[in-house]
Amino acid sequence: MADILSIAGLLLILAGWAFELMNAVSQGRASVPLKFSILYASGSLLLAYHSFNIGDGIFLALNSAAFLVASANILLWLAQRQKPKTR
Image (cartoon, rainbow, N blue to C red; front, side, top):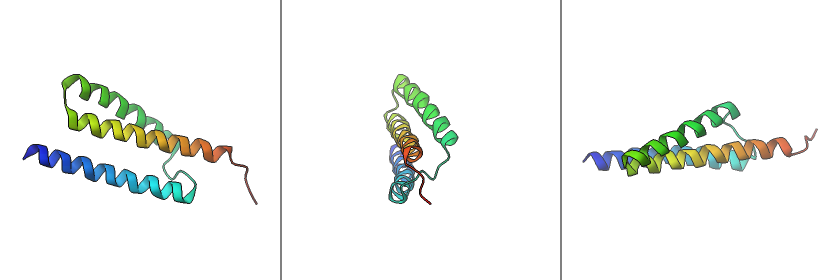
């Protein structure tokens, strides 16, 4: 039962991030602040490493995916900065 709840939590968190990322991509701009994304990506990467070390596959998947989504937000923010501003 605990595994089912863990997987459900994993899917809900990933769905939330996926909707946010799709919204940001469709708008062509990152809606999550850069500092937050950097901290989130860093924390998620460290937690993924920890999850790997303790053998927790569910949290490894969650934190790895969170790292990738936060990294995508960082890349979107950087790409946004490269675009010339229009009036």
